[in-house]
Length: 106
Image (cartoon, rainbow, N blue to C red; front, side, top):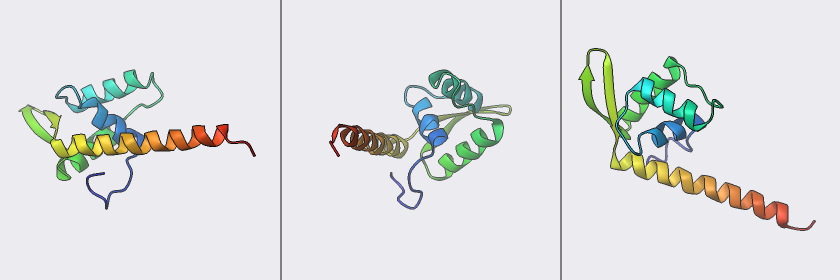
């Protein structure tokens, strides 16, 4: 996942990176995207959002593109996209393994 020391992404981390795939966003936009995309299953509060934005920026997964007062806008970096794609593949393998196990006779 880009930075092996971090390990796998949490669900919130995964959806936050997903939010940046198609456009630049601020923290509130990310929270709205995640809640919409998960149909309310995941709700990210300000503490989670801003902690992850700072973490992702320090890990160079996202980069700041604009500042308007207190509003900061970010975009996904190449490293962030690679991290997202690696996690997506890991999750696909987990689902495949689970489905195959269901199909195997005892």
